[in-house]
Each structure stands twice: as C-alpha cells, then as structure tokens.
Image (tube, rainbow, N blue to C red):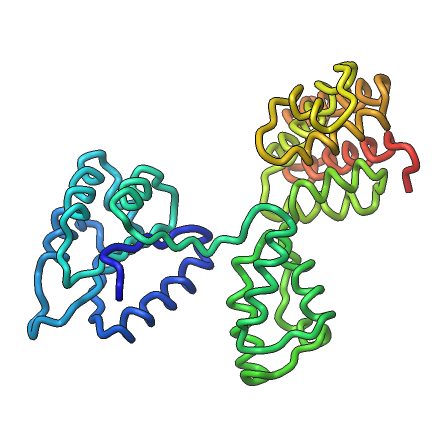
Length: 325
C-alpha cells in the first residue's frame, strides 16, 4: 500500500533514477500522477492539490520537484507538517529535493514520510557493496574485470553509473555481457577520487600514486578544498605527536573521535613513521603551500599555478614517508 508521503533526496544524478522507480511503483498501485512546479508554487497550492480529488475518485500522487526551493520558509515547513499530521487518505505526496533542506526532511520524517536516498555511502567498503548491488541489478552484466575498471574509473562520481549502464544496454542489448574493452567508448573522463585515497598514498610514500589521486580530486574540488583535507589529516597527526598515545583507543580519545577509530589508528601510525622532525616539516610544507595558493608564489596563470603548487606539496609530503617509492 502506498505511503501518504515520500521524500526523495540525495545525489541529483541518482535521485532522478530513484524517482522514476518510485513513480513506476505508484502507477502500478493504481495511482494517477500530478506534477507541480513553477516559480509561483507555494505550500498553499501544494496542500490544495493534495486535498483535491481527481474526477472518478482515483487515488493520486502529487509530485513536487525541487521542493527545497518552494518550501523553504519556516511557515512553509509548519504548514507542511500540519497537513502531514492529517493527510488526504487518497493522496501520496512526493517531495523531490535536488538540494539540502534539513528542516523540510526532518518535518516530513517526523510525520512518518518514507525517505528515499539513493546516494552511495561514504565508507569505501560500503561504497563497494553499493556499486556491486547496482551492477547485479543492471540491464547488462559486467564481467569481473569490467566491474573493477568501472568502479576505479568512476571513483566518487557514482552518479554517472545509471547513464553509463543505459548506454551499454542500448549499444549491446539488455542481458549482454560487458568486457573491459566494451567500456572504452562510454567511460569518458576519469571520475573524482576520495580524499583518503590521496592521504593513504602520501602516507605510503608513493609519490606517483599521490599525484594520480591529487589530479582526480581536482576534477571536482577547488584547490583550497583539497588543501583543507590535507590540513585535517596532518592536524590529527600533529595532535598525536608527543601526546603519549600508545594504541588506537588512546589516540581516538586524544582526537575526540566517536564511532570508528580507524582514522586514529592511521594517524598514530603515520606520526610514528614521521617522527617529530617529519611532522614539523609536513606542517611547514602545508603552510608554505597555503601562502602560495594565496598568491605569495605563482607558477603561471590561475588554475595551472594552483595545480602545480599542490603537485609540489604532495610530492614533497610523500617523500617524507620512510620506505618511499
């Protein structure tokens, strides 16, 4: 039986796919679909549409796209909550969010709305499982090498996955087996990477891998955002240097971490490898790069200079690690 309210939110590229599936379920349940939009849309017109009956008395779903743009005032959220407290039993309200609106989501959840968020999880292992599940449900079958290559290529840009799978199905037919060679025409640019891939490569002393992951991050992140990620990583290491922490639990307590203590283990291990002199040198390099990104020293015009500044920083940080390659 359809719910009285739904919230569809998350990665914009994946939201469209989740909404398509939801509307298919609602149509299969016998609901007609009424879509609302336009700059003049208000909470009043949304509630009015929900309370209005279709001719013939059929149940319906009222779909509000970009709901965060139309229902953003505190009064809007209050009136939405009031409607959801006593909704029309013949209407399912579907709020589609292409941006953040915590108050709107919280109000809908409190009233019992079903929240659909197709975004991949943040942790690497969970993301790998998320990708595997979607490849199993895909209209084509990727062999092991193709699946591994696609996952590596997309990185954090998993919102591109549905489009790539649709293109593969159109080109090879549903149910076809896709090899790594079949991916070449459809992959496009390599997707953005994860910040921990960069810091793991730096900690391992692998300058080549560090530069590779840096370039992937710069596809989707501003240089100052990348630098901030590096600062955060080395601030944890700096706090543990000389702290007396001897194990993962003690390191997590020093850092004030709640939940997973894995970042504390990595920071403690790297602090031990670098030693006081190495940690001090890393902080010095980060400070110098920060000043260079702000214009103290340039390597050319605009983004080229910023990229080279970060390349120099990352290569020097990787060289600090013992056993570097």
